[in-house]
Image (tube, rainbow, N blue to C red):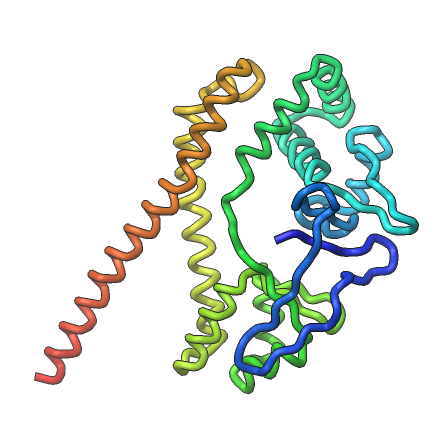
Length: 276
């Protein structure tokens, strides 16, 4: 889903959506006119890349980041800006200085290798998450959850990254997760306990992701990292990532299903023993 937000006037370009109180409202963004490529305002670009806005400005001033495309007072950043920011963050994390990164980027650009490296980064990071965000007013959110949802629950959901609050508007990052949460709440499960479970799942999911990435880094990329990989080897790694995506998801889903089956069977057996 593409993201459309304005740089200078602070609006998101969407008319307020309505809900009937039973289902989340739908909010659509727009692309930048070249196919279906998303575009971002400065704050949203920084958030997506995990950097501070002032760092984004600094990178731009130092020539590490190309200027945005402007439409009047509105400055638009593209998916290529996001890719470049992630690459800069990765290089900083590996010990490069800002000056060193600038020299490296300049050398890659002069040698024509930057486009391939950026393409490699896009291939590595894209298509892992397919979620539809949902935007509504805080009043609509309260109407959805009723007395089961409190201001503290909303604050906790924001801390866990499930929602983003902007004034009196709130965006949940996943329609599927929102609908699953509503289902549990309507079955009588307290929202605070659902958020506790979500916190636990996030921790476990991060551990599983670390294990998969560690295996991939050791056995597919190799100990030398990316610096010494040839163009053919970069293509091989990209193909391996494409193969990993469905495998990783299927392994986790299969193991979780088996674990749930065993746990539910044990619970049912225990209930039957108590009733006997």
